[in-house]
Amino acid sequence: MWRAVTVALTATALGISLGGAANADEKAMRKAPGCAANRWCIYTNANWGGAWYFARDSDRSLKNNNASDGHSINDRGSSVWNNRDNRVVRFYTDNWNWNGRKVCVRPYTGIRNLARYKKMNDAISAVLVNQTLCG
Ligand SMILES: [Ca+2]
Image 1 (cartoon, protein in one colour):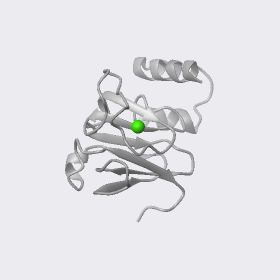
Image 2 (cartoon, protein in one colour):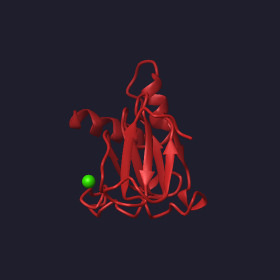
Image 3 (cartoon, rainbow, N blue to C red):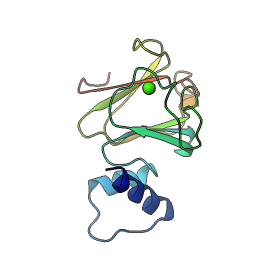
């Protein structure tokens, strides 16, 4: 699995087509470079740039999760993307208790600049994935 993810990320970063018809996952990856299929992704810069962190499941605390630059992703996210299939992803400002401010992101969508949204910039500390609707 990790090898497949690495290949997808590299191909996206270099703009190389792996060949064959583009499927939904490939289209979604192009919208947010580096966000692999069926993962949620956090980026340290706006516009889905900078260092990134991605995972599949809920996480009560991002303090022990390192971004691609080797530093914790906790309180560093500036843009997010949801590539989970049929799951919404809620990003929270507090660790552990699904508390504090939050943003809810529907499948195959993202937030380009968290600074414009509920003071969420550099504040995400936990992530909840489930099937309840946003709103
Ligand atoms: Ca964690």
